Length: 237
Figure 1 (cartoon, helix red, strand yellow):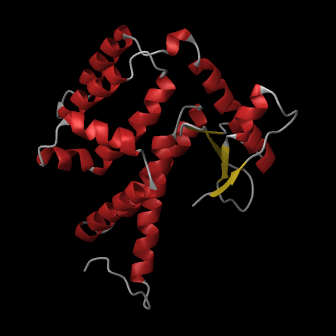
Figure 2 (cartoon, rainbow, N blue to C red):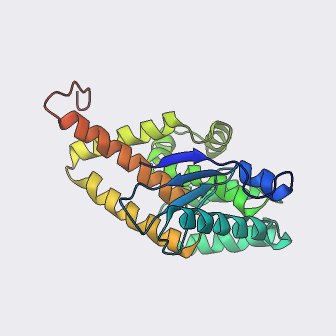
């Protein structure tokens, strides 16, 4: 788990930078010593982390804030707006990367992109994270099997967002998978942790990786709780 703490503005108050700073959420990953890791979550949900090797928590915090600030500034450039040309190129690339996969995920991606025309790529990524998690968790496939339309699914989750109920529900899904295939939870968590480290060191937006890691960690903690001798657990019943 992570130790979260909201930050007040640092430096002189009253300016735009200070106001933005006051809206950031800082989370320090538990560590007995260096190197330290810090994550910064922007008001919209986008998340960044320090990519330097930091010997102090303060240094990790400053580096994470710098990465988030740089990405926020770049996001405001006109070239970062979602345009018809960008949508066309993105769909072509997605089709190549998912040549052996179902076309349904491409269709959902297309609808999402078109609904965000004219908005920034960071805004789109914040919404895309939810659907990445739904796809990873198998929820989109289950909804497709129930014959739910893409439009209705997008409309529902666009309004709902990512909340604790959704995280808990996904964790329960992974507990079920662990029951059917013992050991899969640990393997998936290790892979997610490696992906999170790689994304952080690249300085890219990493909410999907971070959420995935935390959902799997929640599932594992529940599994360990259920396996304790004194546990009164409904898992597996």
